[in-house]
Length: 149
View 1 (cartoon, helix red, strand yellow):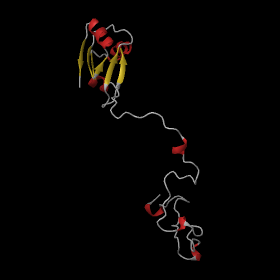
View 2 (cartoon, helix red, strand yellow):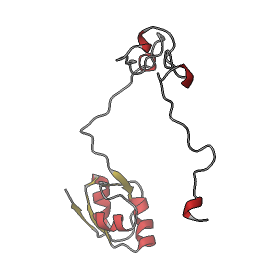
View 3 (tube, helix red, strand yellow):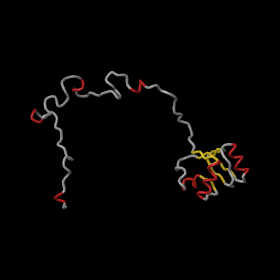
View 4 (spheres, one colour):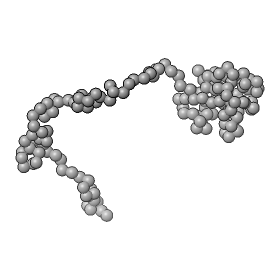
């Protein structure tokens, strides 16, 4: 194969549809727009989501609830999960950097620790939020808690 042999695959290249260039082109006369009416005129614009007079879907489907723009989303870890994470990754400090480097959270995630389960190991926590029950359990196991903004 040489440069002078290269050509597109058969059927890959189409001739340009030249509208309004006489009857011999096959696209003359009304230029594939049908006869008369608003849609054949210049400047015509169809309304978004118009369904030909049928009630549009955004009006047929009922609306429910709302999305609170001030909500703060947390990546949640329970005490029961933390022992497994400490064993698997060999972490003594439960920080955002450690969690990110081990692929447990993404860079922009905020972390909250909840008190479901038991904590057996002594771990230092530097997280965005923590529940009261979890804080008591961590300090009872000999660990420490620091809230990072």
